[in-house]
Image (tube, rainbow, N blue to C red; front, side, top):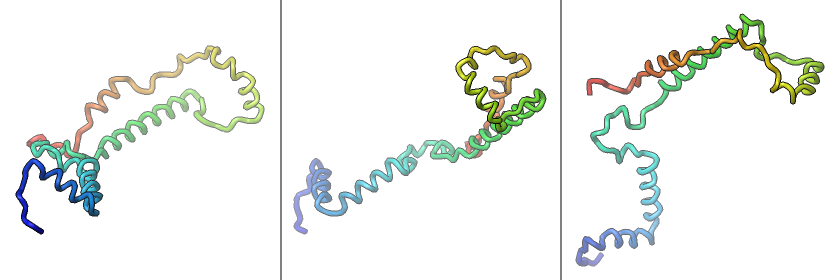
Length: 140
């Protein structure tokens, strides 16, 4: 390669022109995409706490499943107390009766006094407040 004068202002453009004619163009684009989209933590500020960078959210999923189990348990116990099945197969006669009354079902007034709220907003707030990130280190 012949020695030429080095020009700082043209360096980026010359590199790009040189890479376009080779397979490096595609490889450079793929590497940049990987750095920008797949591994954004590599470009992050080094002062960013470790628990903020692409942390696993399994603790949130566990809390969500625990909350859902709690709701299901509450609904099941309430339906058992009231003697109302949550799901069951309808007989052919019940299906026909249901389809005949479909339009009028929304206007029927049923007694809902026996049905209580499944959870209080305070309960949900307590669950949210009790979430702790296992990656968070308070000493840092």
